[in-house]
Image (cartoon, rainbow, N blue to C red; front, side, top):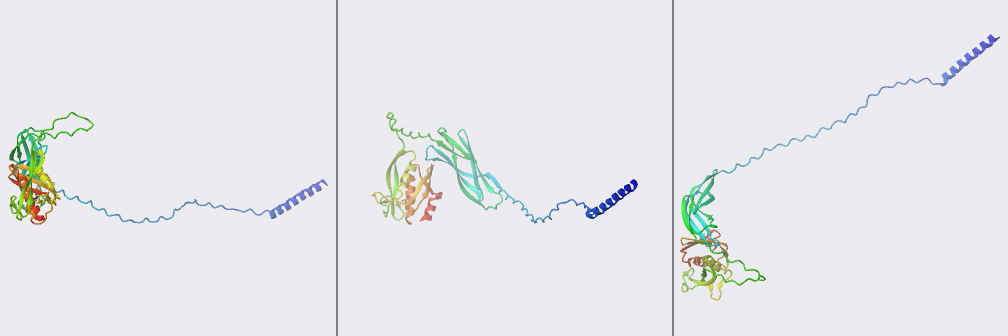
Length: 335
């Protein structure tokens, strides 16, 4: 009996397990088999590069060739004449005036060098000309002025030698300097005697008596007369310059006072430049504007200026230049 009961229990247990297994099989889903595929490594591929724009290279310009430097030849000027001029100035100034001829129209004066040893000035005047130019071979006259430094030199005799040509001059004693300016009024000073002035204090200027036919003075131009008029000036050792300045100061005065004398320079505005006197020859340089009142003014203008210089015993001949041009040539272009 116990064995039968035991077998029944065992059979029941086996039957129960079998039923449960079938039920579970119906409830539980079949296992899903998943297959995982390995993913390749993600790499970033850059977008295709756009082709760069092609810029043609800029052609390189060859460097511009520098123009060849102009080449010159050098030499010494041929000096034919050498004069020493004493300028009417304060302090005293001396000039060496060289004259000669250049071999062609391409040659020019380059420079002048002057050195002094004792009482002798020795100078060298050089020329230059372009080597790459065909020059016409024809003598060209020249004049070149070389200043001589006489500052501080004692009075006496001196010699000048330029390119082998020699001249001499006597340096006069320096004139006293003008007196110093007066002190201010509020600073009283004891009275001093007036300085004794030396030099010429009266000069002549020259005007024109129209249609006078030589009755009042030398006959000039269109039957006119040249008449001297005395002027008082500050005493000076340079009377030629002073007389010339007196005449030039009459600009805009067609007639002189109540005299009726005519001034051919009344429309001009001129100033005196260098004035030299050497061996009786005066050279006067004027600068500025000049105007003539018809053809008859040409001889009047010329006579008035030349007579200024010729009134002095130290002057025998005179040469006048206006703006670097000889007086006759300048007046012929204005007449």
